[in-house]
Image (cartoon, rainbow, N blue to C red; front, side, top):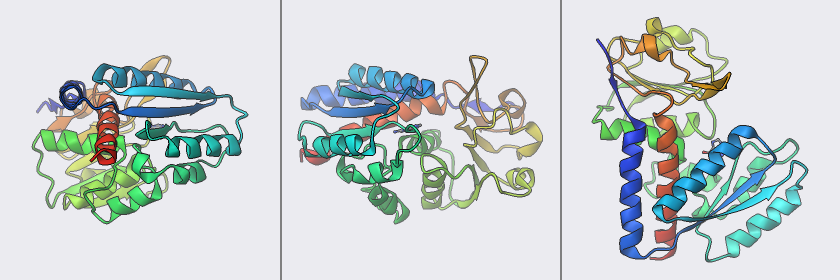
Length: 280
Ligand code: GUN
């Protein structure tokens, strides 16, 4: 068996073309404010990619750059100002923040209607309640969209999410639960992870351990979604050993070209949805 590859790159391109058309047809002027504090190399690349993708579909971005020594108070003041600014529809606070800053307090301060990342406790609560109006974090939203677009049946399936971050693991678990999966959320303290993984029909790997998931971890015919992106000597690796696992899985996502491009497409979709909610 060789798994079918789910191309996030192709699907994301289609979604972005649709967004571009929608923006042109509606004469919308969505604007996203991006806050980047410090000089995390990966964050600088992500932000550049997000801004480029936004420009291509017709979403304006404004970047607010700060040094590592920015104070909590300065960021709070900026967020307050952006919350009030009617021309700004979305606010993205790029994580991680430099040490010493309280990211949870800042995320909570963002107007939940401008929270295009879906990290505000209000949106997390809505997601937990299965409320359709929740803004859902871009990466797990992208994971679900890939599963749906590929017509993968989820009802009653055993889904394993490896990772429990606020950005990926927890919301991915909630979304799969909403699809009536039986969800297991594994993390660094989980015992017998390999055995648990062998029972899963759907595996969402988001643990940041390059090539950790091997062929003998995967049930024949399982669907494997790889959220991992770890750079080793300049090359990007997922959490899944793709070359091995593709021989047992039914569907698999590559790294790069899998979940990554979907994350950006979903952020743009969330921004346009925020705009339309603010301009009913
Ligand atoms: N850092 C890593 N992923 C993300 C993301 O999706 N949003 C933000 N704001 N920061 C991140």
